[in-house]
Length: 131
Image 1 (tube, one colour):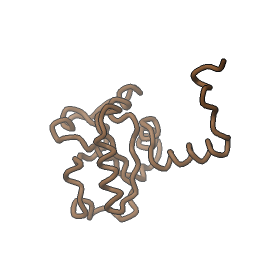
Image 2 (cartoon, helix red, strand yellow):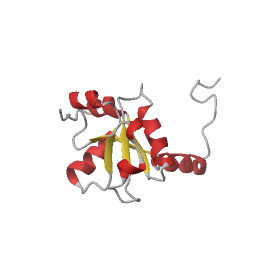
Image 3 (spheres, rainbow, N blue to C red):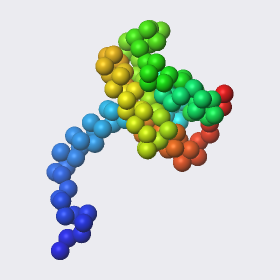
Image 4 (cartoon, rainbow, N blue to C red):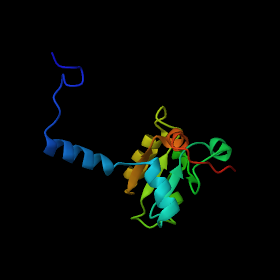
């Protein structure tokens, strides 16, 4: 008898490759965001989509606060149409980043979610900005 892990067989390697490569088009992780902002020229805009009050308590360094309800063409007018937005919210228990990603995509903007959100950021041992 096989384990619960193997009860459903793994996908074929070519299917797994396509699946996991596709996921990277939709998401990035906290370590990659940290590395890009500390060691490279960040070629994206990091959006904290939580409320201004939560943002003030602590946010990822360099993030701009833009709650989902405020995302609009007018609010994005200062950014080139090909600007990549990386969105995050409180963490895996929150779907705020997903809602913001939907809104940005509806506006025709490139978007990725920073998986783990603020919880993931803190779990990696990275610090926050306040204010």
